[in-house]
Image 1 (cartoon, rainbow, N blue to C red):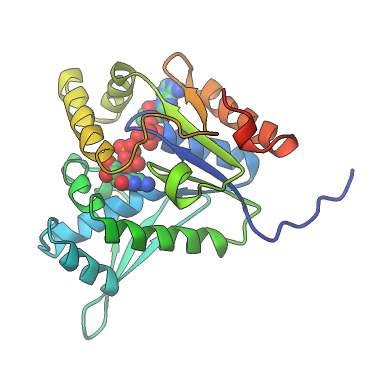
Image 2: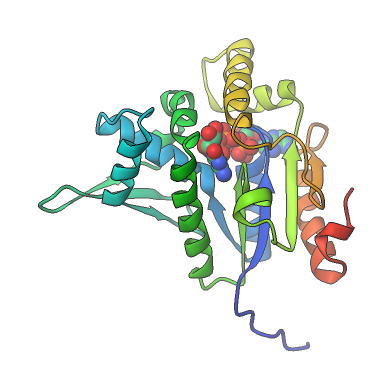
Length: 244
Ligand SMILES: Nc1ncnc2c1ncn2[C@@H]1O[C@H](COP(=O)(O)OP(=O)(O)O)[C@@H](O)[C@H]1O
Ligand SMILES: Nc1ccn([C@@H]2O[C@H](COP(=O)(O)OP(=O)(O)O)[C@@H](O)[C@H]2O)c(=O)n1
């Protein structure tokens, strides 16, 4: 067996896509199979929305949200079970919150776009994402979100836009929300996508980005499509020569 040279920087796999396309779950499984870490950037936006609501900060007030970011420290695991935490300096000491489950509540999904629309908030979070990846010590990291292929890591050797039809995405999301009707879930994700798409384009692949439409793929096929794309890119040509 040939020796593999030690990577000094992690190999980046950038994945974007709309709600329910499979980004988080497929990225997580693919990362695990490749021995890579996974950074779910949406979780940070959700955690910030949670903290804004928890501290009764006006989500429309960018300066107030930025002030909150001066006081918080965001914690996330990159491998194994996903745990999301917030450490908040309160003037005298620190409060710590495990928000792993709460950030998935429909209330947060309904409010998060109000925080993610602020340009300076995005810049600060993007700097944090780059720092987390650079200091991860891992051979590779899959980063998933909305603007990873275009803004956070436009030079990543692997860039993927994962999509699925709105109906398929709503059906998948509905499976995670007991009691919700298909129509309601479809309306919710469509409304959130519309708000988010006004800030960044995650519905059309930028030049050089590989499109993976999972509408007719099962979970295993979607994971394999990501792994194949990574292997192709690592084995051969730069990603901007291999549009599908
Ligand atoms: N290709 C697929 N086939 C079937 N179910 C899928 C597929 N991809 C994702 N899912 C399921 O759909 C749901 C939403 O996926 P998720 O990864 O949360 O999407 P996103 O992060 O894009 O919002 C999850 O329950 C997931 O297991
Ligand atoms: N890179 C990113 C990731 C998420 N987000 C925001 O964070 C929200 C939650 O992202 P998510 O990835 O957890 O959402 P789902 O697709 O999993 O429902 C999105 O609706 C966007 O408002 C963003 O603006 N940019």
